[in-house]
Length: 294
Length: 303
Image (cartoon, rainbow over all chains, first blue to last red; front, top):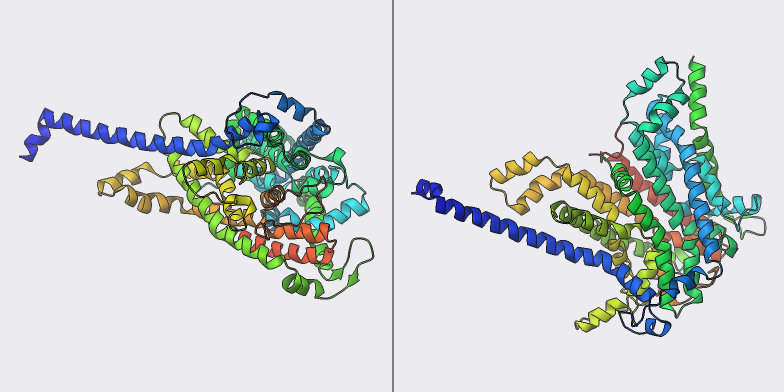
């Protein structure tokens, strides 16, 4: 009995239809959930953008949709005294900081991945400990050092200079990647008469490009987003403020104008988001790299 | 030969050796020293023994509220973030149509600079005219005071943290795609339903990543600074340019976290000793959880 139903063409197509129906319902359920989630992630950007383009009066109401579109709000923010300076400072901090971090951290990561020496595990543990350390732990003596000894408070140098002496997270991430490069490549280069440093530059660096790109992006974002550092060292001198720090004071100066505040918020978010679209792959690879390989 | 190798090692490691000594070991020792000193940053430091310690633990009104808030955030925010990150990660592995769009949409908020994201949420959740309460009111739901209400300020911060789930989503997504497909097929043949497949196949395979997410989440909570500080300042309306004159933790100490205390004591009250004590507590907590992370084989230290 069962065997006849199984072989009957009608039954097969019925089972097929049933399977297709289940698959279709599954598709609908998954994609409805995905759309709901997408709304949660995207709507905040949309509301911020809509408010940024409202008139001053309308931004004080509960309206969600602008009556008229005030694109000049973005220009007003851009032309606010200081805004361009914050922009330049942030760029300087991010570009210099990222470059110095890469130059100083790559050889260290290479040594920790490749060389065998006493105390290597201890060094690695120290790298991880510093990586996990909240910056507030050492801020008091650090501030005294930069402000009282070197008289560099009111500038961003106390944030940039340390990056010439490596960054723990970058070392860690680079090392994890360098471990995956077979030793043979380097050995072959050394047979050809390359020194260790030359082998690093010529052979290892080109192979480590994805990891270097990821570290560069992370460090750039770190500098761009940093709030605590500029708050400690730059707050006393508005000419040294960064976008993240200045944005907050912008709210102070325009506390009733949500439209201008949101326009400024958008202008601070925009560069990182644009950068992400250009470097999406490197970024996602980097996140996976930090998070372990099972 | 041996000497040459040692020299080479030192040459490669030198930037880090200098960095870790000047920017970690020296200030750490200095912090221990200052925790026993009375020092306002102007007159010479004098020895006070354990006074700073007993002040922070018994008389400083912000310490215990900050620790309680941190505990709340560890229990509620970290677990919700892990659950939500896992859920979104699973969802994105199942999406067939428009996967690229959804992945980008889910990831993007993670990139928003914390100050900008917090400002955006302060606006979205502002009780008077914000879109969220606007919508809640329209569908007849209660409209909380969010960042202006001590019972709702931490849930509001949690919402902000869930919005920036992108990092966890990517990590979970990668680990879910690594689960061997045969195991699912074998489980299905044994008649396992969706829930059983998740419980007996997915979860055991990704448990190291769940642990990693929990522990790094706890460590991030120890460092939680910018979002609660900015949210409190924006909601209280007290924002000065250089911002020295605000009472942290608005409303009613509900957004205080330990790192904020270091700033409050060291840079607003000029109490270097007290700030050093809090810094050392923070250091001890961070190191305990880092040790847990390194001890368990979470693949964190593949050699």
